[in-house]
Length: 274
Image (cartoon, rainbow, N blue to C red; front, side, top):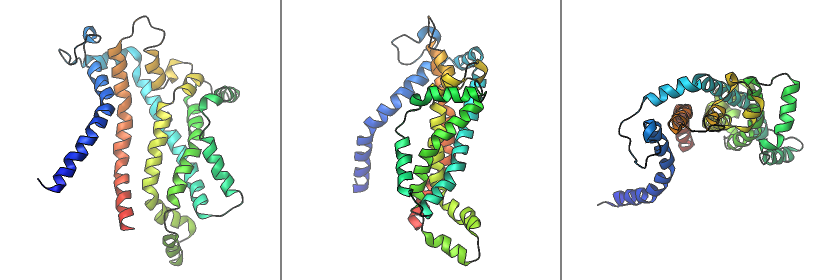
């Protein structure tokens, strides 16, 4: 056996326990979602049959479609709003020198230590004064604002690694600063933007406390609230429906990651060329 195969076997042997720990909750979720109702609490691992009707029943009983659309709408717009503000801000921090630049960086870092729960009462009063209670657009604004500090901190660190000489070469060819930013700088920054977009999307997708505080009607509920309603305040919990809803809630995140993964691979090749 060659040395390469030995290293491969050792690497897989070391990674296998970690993979089992990570994948075990997902396996339990999927298997429980596919169990018939009478077998959900049974000690058997594999169901006697695959109950695909659990997904159909869950969708109809919980009005899952509206919650899924609300979460997609809020998460996508919040991530886009955060990036629209963060890309120019991060570019300015990485390319310009201005007074109190270090203080602003520290402010961004310290602001990440504040939990949204601390500000939830103030956010409720602010949103109520604007007449946006029970409106998913309020979540877009709040999530986008909360993500800005994180996205600026992520992006400015990567932007600083892009050589200035590339922009200067474009300026010498007659390109303006804005055209250089769009044509030269942003294509090189796509890997960082993709990674930041994934984190911003996931942060908005999983948030629960602010959504529970600001949204009152079922028609405006997001997925975390709708899944929580399947468990809270019930005498009996239909775990097959809960797990089916949880599984469906993980699918959009997986799709976003798979779609943006190509930018991550492109970023690795760009880094190798540089």
